[in-house]
Amino acid sequence: MDGPDIVSVKRERSVSNSEAGVIKIKRSQTPDDIMSAILKEENRKRAKQHVSHGCHLVEGKMKHGMEDCLVATCKKIDGHDLGLYAIFDGHSGRDVAQYLHDHLFHNILNQADFWRSPKEAVRRAYEETDKDILENVVGSRGGSTAVTAIVIDGEKVVVANVGDSRAVVCRNGEAKQVSVDHEALKERKMVESKGGFVSHKPGNVPRVDGQLAMTRAFGDGRLKAHITSRPDIAIEMIDEQTEFIVLASDGVWHVMSNEEAVDCIRGMKDGGEAAKELINQALSRGSKDDISCVVVLFQD
Image (cartoon, rainbow, N blue to C red; front, top):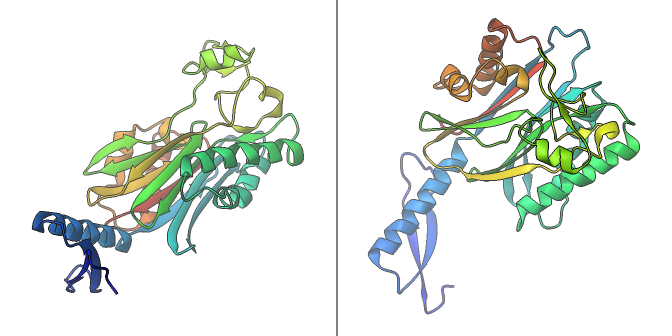
């Protein structure tokens, strides 16, 4: 039963929304406030109705076997609809990437403060998972990048990453990178503050201590004193202009810009086909590394 200061407003069914619903508002609200509340609820329902995904991966030509893993799945937890998506690009073996595939999302969602403080929960889970990897999975060699995206109720997405796997949002046709490429030159000061160095030999990419091309990664025990597994984290709201998100390993981004990747698949209605098309384009441009890709669609 509504209280003396609350009134219920019933929404009728519409073509785009098969469910009628009730919105509770304060009696003191103006007609403009009421209309704003109704439109906000309609947008929320609309966003939840049109989330789908697809993925694809191919082994490269580097003769070290497939080292990538990916996640693309949906779950319902505590009454929330979650989409869980990730790319894990392993190096010096697949063990770390496989461990992340099996455990990272479990560790994130088991954080007690995930719902109220998702950034802190994700950051803590990344660092705790890295500790587990260093103690129980690999020794001095072997590591992995990670880019993870958690879509919550079709309303927002929590993106985190370490390394150079990337997440790009397409909003109204425009590409927006929501992850951070952790390259050695960009974070030279951080590396040097930890006692490491960045070398740049002719014909090669800059590397931490002459070895690793990124400053943040899971594993890599031999370099851990000079790098970190602390992720960059962003929260993006999903609205009617949000078309899709691409997660992909560096096998795509070494040969395609964010804008080229978005233009390549914009308008495609199937996430799996979009992921395949993006990878085929990367291969046609000479990419030789393992390539993994997830595409999450937010519109018909």
